[in-house]
Length: 215
Image (cartoon, rainbow, N blue to C red; front, side, top):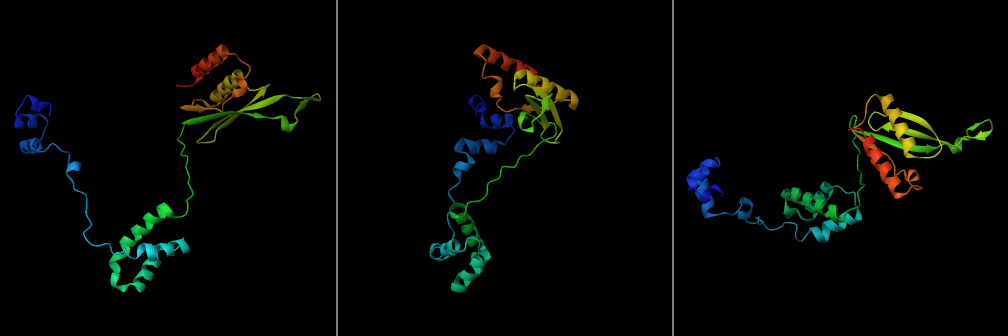
């Protein structure tokens, strides 16, 4: 239509690589092909209009696991005049009814991990093990790094609590041991590393952590 503002239909059509007949056809009707289609009308009366709600639905409610072919055979036994041609129509109608009114289906979001995509970091409190040195309980945690795909693991002893320094040191040692870096690195919220810091210190640690992330 841009070329048509300054050129004749054949010239404008040649510039956009379609035929002049197509150009003249578009001149007469500018609607899209999808706008020209009329709604599809039913070509025959609905054979299940008087059967589905009154007979099929009660069967589906009474026996939720019943197979469509069993319902089809029962409907033909009751109404032989309907004929075998209703099978596909009946199956589609049953599938649509179950999608709305049937039993709830188990929803599963499967996780697909890719090679070298995600590395995970977390801290584990080791107090339950009761580790002590010279009778004095050792206050420590483990920094734990793992690759989601292959299961590579690295652990690092942290004396004290969670902190940015502990995360940075543990991650650095894990990546040195791994010999590379994943595309993404995920941790938990690490709120313990920020709870006693003022706003400027928190912003600084966030910036330092972003600088540490592998490219």
